[in-house]
Length: 290
Image (tube, rainbow, N blue to C red):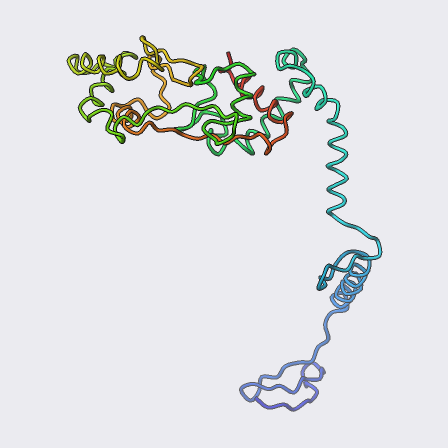
């Protein structure tokens, strides 16, 4: 490439002096005026923005801008305004019992909307967005409750959790019959067969009879003679066909062998009392509250 400026004979425009392949010349044509106008306008606008609004990071902060604008302060104002608008509802929730709240249509609407939001934020990862639960995580739409399904029972469970380590946590410890060698593998298999028979699942009658004897010795104290469970102890009803960890024989055997012992966190201290009450009422209203 050579550089030699001249006037192009065809267009009458000065070249840049760049020539390729001996005869390919680059014309030195100016940018369109509208394009330059937009460019310079953007430069002026940018400088004005830098001066008026926060823009440049510094070692210990950033330039504040002459207008003193802050998105953080604007958000804080919006949050404060929202809290002020909600204050009367929050106060009413704090003061009233769940049964009274459920009789107030406007207050109940506020509770259900807020409870749904808090459930999605805090509970859905384990119980599912529809509260349908998963293996090891209870379905909150049915009417099967280990610790009772009243508003107050649910609120206590949410507040203190299950085996969470909180001083007020609900506790239930099913023995690890297999791990601790309380029962043999054969006894566990027989007991699982009997337990399944309580909910109508057919199995080996002889095994079920042997399991019935083991059940009477080891399980009746918590689950009751008929296997219908005890709410005060968090012992599940074994006759309804609803299983937290699965209702197959292998699932029941594993429950007997290991004791399972899932954990629900305590939300006391993480969520305020009003939010916990809203969550409890929301869960109660899903259709499974007694």
